Length: 376
Ligand SMILES: NC(=O)C1=CN([C@@H]2O[C@H](COP(=O)(O)OP(=O)(O)OC[C@H]3O[C@@H](n4cnc5c(N)ncnc54)[C@H](OP(=O)(O)O)[C@@H]3O)[C@@H](O)[C@H]2O)C=CC1
Ligand SMILES: O=C1CO[C@H](CO)[C@@H](O)[C@@H]1O
Image (cartoon, rainbow, N blue to C red):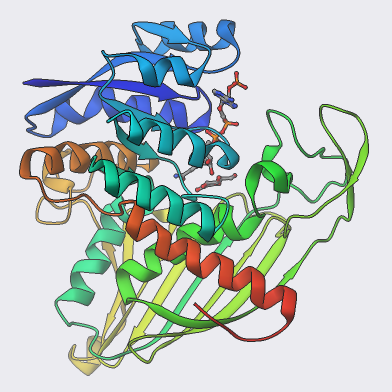
């Protein structure tokens, strides 16, 4: 097996899921390359060392430029807040490293374009971690749509709902709440949550032509976690938009962090001429499917438990009936990345594909701001 030396930047939520993916991929998939956890980098040496000890990294760095400069690193994994994605990804590409970058690709389209240009000029393998494509039930939805089983598609709808920012005392900025600070996150729910829904939608249903959106910031001022100063909140707390897809279908999307009771409810539904399907992250191994060609006396929504070896990714896991979970989406994404190194076929979504999602996000935010339809 060929080693692939990983330099991870960030030990937070995604640092953990990716590290698990690197450790597990070769245990379940037959792959030529195997990731080696070479180094983890973060500003806090103590926390990086504790993470390295827990996850099995050989060394730590506290300056990402030092990590990129190391000859023993093949791939840089960017798991930092969004405002660092561009600088790190471009520097890594210029140093000839492969780049795996967390979503959203960038703070905005202008940054995303620069990143794509740098990565393509360097010619290095690259990927963006839109992991929900690798939920087996979502991959099965893609298969059913591509097989033409739904026929002409009329409607696409998706929601991503959370409730963790309702309390006005939640600060913004700092290590735990950078998502509420536009300087670090770029946007609110649009880049953080709707970006996932948009990536999946573009993958399942094709390009989006134009959008009409509204956003709201429910809590107007919050204390900054580091300075203690009260500041205006400039992120979108909630966003809704509707759109036209290239294939003639209509889309409707909603995301908020103010839906009491919802922690991470991502749902999607696609309605076609012959069939419909729907999926819910809280029941992620199930794909609901309605096929109008079924015999009318038994026609109805089927709940397909996606755990059979014939279904996407499931041949690599347990026996039918035994499900897998959220963390497996990252294991699948690592496995697909490693396979792409063997085959030379770019893995998806790469930077260029993720830029399409960024374009929709920017159009959505501009539409809400200017209160008009925006072309993507
Ligand atoms: N695909 C998905 O479903 C998900 C994607 N994400 C994305 O992943 C990214 C990271 O999110 P998450 O893991 O939740 O974030 P966390 O806040 O949990 O972790 C961020 C990490 O970045 C490190 N960091 C911050 N600044 C620097 C710096 N200048 N140099 C080196 N390291 C730095 C922090 O360590 P320190 O402070 O010590 O420097 C910390 O370890 C975001 O882009 C987010 O949008 C997040 C969740 C899910
Ligand atoms: O998928 C996700 C779940 O929620 C997180 C925020 O709480 C997002 O950052 C992330 O992308």
